[in-house]
Length: 97
Image (cartoon, rainbow, N blue to C red; front, side, top):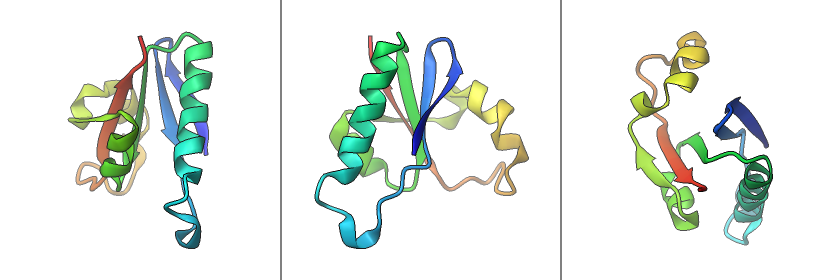
């Protein structure tokens, strides 16, 4: 998992994965909050993720948005994905400012 900077004010939590037998004990939350802290330190104003588990991110303070609100991600990377345009992930975002 890592924080990926897409734009001067936008970053993505990317590749978050916690083993099934280790879920529910706060590991994922610690990883995401570490990314949030790093983004704040860098002056990033918004952080997002594409996820199959929007409820997990919602508990941390992210909100579900339409993927079209992330043109930097969609046109920069998603076009190359074999699932495009029928992506089954949800987009979630948090404003940090």
